[in-house]
Each structure stands twice: as structure tokens, then as C-alpha cells.
Image (cartoon, rainbow, N blue to C red; front, top):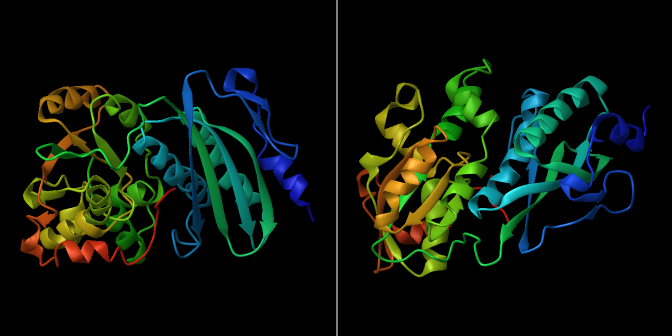
Length: 324
């Protein structure tokens, strides 16, 4: 049976990395040696994905590899950081070489698409879980945080909402077509790194929508000391969501479902048009969904029976993304 070092050499050693990627020493030693660029701060986040908690254990291995990296990169996107490096710790029940090859293909493909260098990690025996630490760079004093939203600003989201929850529901109903629009959004979320960079000098606050729009909006409102009004009718719903879940179910998925990995931002009103133009050039929509208010609390979502601000303080029913 292959040792952990054989598995790392076979599946998790990048074909090329070097000084041009800021990697003085990568996979194969006790530590990686990295070289951040001058004038940049290091943004670091870690997420752990556990089989049958964060993803179905019998999902395609390639999708599991993609998803494990994507959910961590989404945290860098929310900070307006440029992805540079990652570490990956993988626990496996069995060292199935074919499964590992597919998993590694999904992981490496997203590394290549986002210019993220895998610079180290660990492989061990245990319940299937993947811990991914991502590192990025953001210029001094330009990082987007959760604490900058101001009364009167516009709340907006990238892309569409509810696809993560809709995709999970589709999987649970037995859907296995990887091209199904909802299932694809659940199994292969796209971290909005380019959007985070485009909005970095326009937005006042940002967060990625991992635990559900309302739960994550609650984090922004808490950090910023403000409230908000959400216009439920304005929510951009993922393709096929209403057909799959009905209008009320689609709204519920968009508001509380999680696993969307879109960006929720707070913008001065005079920046909204420019923000929309920049994202349109990326083929991505930016949809205003509400306003920041001076009075703490949340209004505008009562038509589907939400309990109000105290409900959001209690937190989501499970952490499916989060971030440092």
C-alpha cells in the first residue's frame, strides 16, 4: 500500500511553482517558504469540509476536490484579496488511487484557474475530511471587512442566491446530472475572487454568503453596528430554483439556505452603478437587495415568517462555510 509520502508525491505535488509564484520552497519539506510582495498584507483563512456534513460522501471526487478549495477561496474574495497559496490536509478512510486522482484533478484545476499555488499539506487516515488553508494578498488598508457598512448605503449581492440549497435538495431527490444548474452550483461553487478585486475600492463592507444571506448579513450588521431593510422581491434567484422549490421555497433557500458563495456588499449609493458596470464586464450581475439603516435590526423579510433580529443572533442551524 502506498505511504502518505507516495500519495503526496503522486497527487499533490504541483507540476511547477517557483519564485514567480512567490514560492521559495514548496511541497516536500517541513514548511513552505513564501515571499509576499512588497506593500501587501497577508490574508489567511481556513475551512474544513467533512463528508456527509458539508458534502455528500458519494459525490464525484473531482467535485469534492473543487469544492473544498472553492469554499476557502471564497473568504479571500470577500476580503478583496488576491489568491496566492494554499495548504491542504486530507483525511481518508482508504487510499483509493483512482478516487485520489479524480479528487486531485478537481483541486488542481481550480488552483490553476485562480493562480493559487499548493505549497504543502498532509494526508492521513480517518473519516473523509479536507482542511484547506488559503493565503492571499491585499494592499495595506484596502481589505474589505464586515465592519464598514454605513446607514444609507445600498446592500447588493453578486450572481444569484438559493442555488446551493436548491442543489442539495436536488441531490437528496436523487439528481446526479453534473450539468443540472442547481446541482452544479452546489457541488462546484465559484469563488468570486475577481468580483472582490473589482469592488475593493468601491464597497464599504463585504462577506461571502456561506451560511445563508440573512445569517451572513447579521454578521455584517453586528460588526458595523447598524441595521438593514431587505427587499425580498428583489432577491436574484438561481436558475431553476422556483421550478424546483416553488416561489416561497425559493425565497427561503435564497435567504437562509447557504452554500451560495456569492458576495454580499454594502456600497455608497453613488458607487452602485460603477460596481455594476465592473461586474458586468466579468459576465456577473450585481443586484441591490436593500439598504443599511441606522436603527439596529432587520426589517422587510416578515412576509415569509422570519423571527426578526434575535433569530439571526442565534445563528444558523449549522456552520457550512464560515471562515477565519
